[in-house]
Length: 231
Image 1 (cartoon, one colour):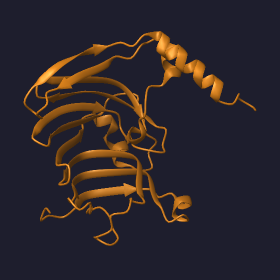
Image 2: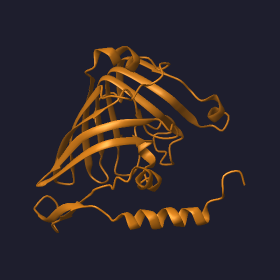
Image 3: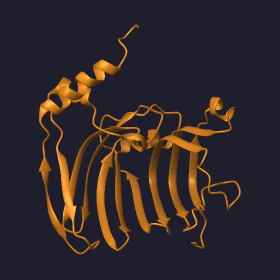
Image 4: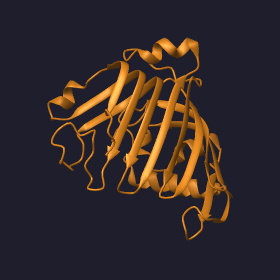
């Protein structure tokens, strides 16, 4: 493992869900971090340095964070089992949002870009890097707070551009078909085919726009299996 502290920060503010504590779970609805340096590490035997109980415990964590805001921070994640490495640097560039980003009690206003993230890493022997702009907070789970995102990812000959909004990023499972039907805007899917050996080459890539019929059929199927409002 790495011979350095798991976390250091000039200031951390957070709230705790009392309801979840009764079930022996720890849910942080909002965490605000200022001038932080974090190291998260998972060993090859699945031990994690962020588990605060027995160091040999490999059971799922009962610690969860719903939303997070960062004003100047650095996160390094190392997974020795995959292997996978990630380094993320975050900073708030909007002076008007800086005080709210530091305050865990402040209601987030994610209507504009105010925080910049730069990241780089390596998956097996394949390197990647990118940048992203987001709002005041990022939502991970159980919050329903959407945040805007605009950025890019570069991995070898592949480049992926992203722009949109996300809510509860840890639980993304698909495309909101109701929004596609309501707006009439079809999502673009960036596809890529890597070579057989990681990091060596790419077979092909391109953008695909699925037809509206896919989403019309999906919404019809949802209507059949979902109960009517008020029933």
